[in-house]
Image (cartoon, rainbow over all chains, first blue to last red; front, side):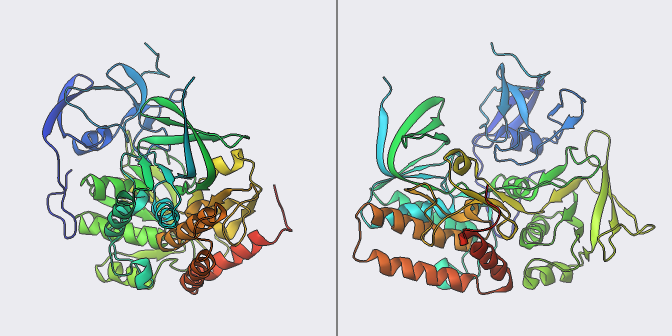
Length: 101
Length: 367
């Protein structure tokens, strides 16, 4: 959920753009991170752990913890909490450890 | 052969300590390069919407993000300061070369002096299902809310009643999110009572001597079980409460980000008052590796106010060791040290002072 009114801060969002999450078209704003756009769209489960298949979500949001690794435009293990959203990006849930192209 | 970037002072980390170090050193005439892994410098300051305490010299009365903007501007206006964003330091080598990754390039830097101002990372606590989506570090909640303008959920359980737990709870309330409760395992509230009173006045319970026993939910958090702790910090049976929340926020402390110090072979010491392993350093913040200084949370977790003063002190000390401002540096260093003593005069500061005494003492368990 996006904050529309705030007592202290004003959010200057970029242009609204489309991207794809597992093939589904979603909207986000230019300049924000992929994680922010997915969160705003209500997506909290970003993947599953390799060994136990437990759901993984956003935890640190500053590129420290590796909880948010996803496949972006075919490249695996992208920390989506620090990767900026771009128009038409294809963000996919990663299967396993990911393969380099 | 790839080019090596030459600089007089390399600063790793563009948060409050790093930026303060950069302008202090540059003001004395040294040329400075700052490495910042994020897209924008300012560190965690840019997420702070509360007003700072302290004295005017530490920007008391200003909100954190305003102080961040000011520090960025100071560095931006100084031709002696260069800031490389989206750049992560990778290693400090025996010959003094520092490597970094920036915009998909491998970079080499050859500085005369290094200031490590890498900050801290959030701690985790153990309880069943603590890996469920919907459980965040307090910093992540601040990033989502105050940088991106997105709330993490509808109803939050906050764990930890230190200043971070209290401030982030208040910020969540400002963003229209309900706080089910703030729980704190210790018998007393750790943060400033001025923050706690604001929250309590709004009707949010702050439950001391309480802990979380488990989180539950199918694919993400749907609730949490909390319970009371007795005087021996043991769960009181029958005191369990089930809170329906979709967010659990952890504000359970920070650990200094000291990987580079370990790797650079600085002598390290575990000091609980400083929140973990920290580099042994002298009064002017130089570590046991000559020419390598530290400032801010990496040398002991405190607050942004003291991180800025430590940054200034390290910047002056590093510049002075290169021959800049030798006439005025001692006076500036004394001023910074006096400000640090003033900032550490309160009860929380006493703990830090004990930690620093322990750290400067050459005895004890050293690793």
